[in-house]
Length: 226
Image 1 (cartoon, rainbow, N blue to C red):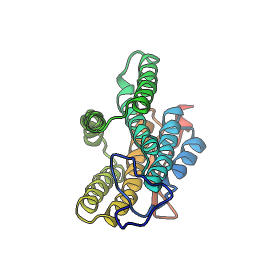
Image 2 (tube, rainbow, N blue to C red):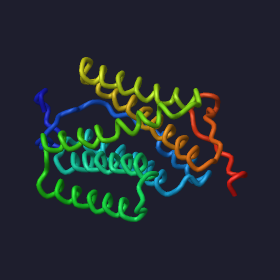
Image 3 (tube, helix red, strand yellow):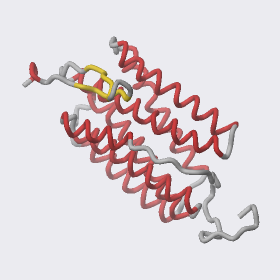
């Protein structure tokens, strides 16, 4: 290590050294429980599970700074973005089984290739492309949403993204730890906003409410659609 003190995990083999204290967040578990309780569908269950897989992989990577553990962080990042793409674009997809099949095979192939070959710049470019593909659809959902609280979720998503990036770029190493906290809330706000939009598409009369008056989640009324 840089301070000359040997570590159990030496030598460092990861391509990125982002060492900092790690923080645990149960927002994805909270979202999964709400998804199962109100039967939002498999897509959101898998999304929240991917959030938790990413969080666990991220802790493994930052605790060890080993290349294999880095893959356990980076690969779930791609799986998560593929799920976001599916949720965003699936309502207009006419072939219901084709898109999830393609995304599953693509995610499996990427995971295998990333494990065998490993990517650095290629991974970053690939991940950025996936993010950019989500932006226009996310904006479309935002401008077509009339609910002020749902729009507030989208604004909180953008705010946490900007604040997290600011702390990560200018206040390392602990700023990077704060980035993880902001990204935890960032994912929660994104997921909750998309759940609201999906419930609205299905006519479930969604409303944004606060758990203990603070943590936002979506409550639906399916009575009229059953």
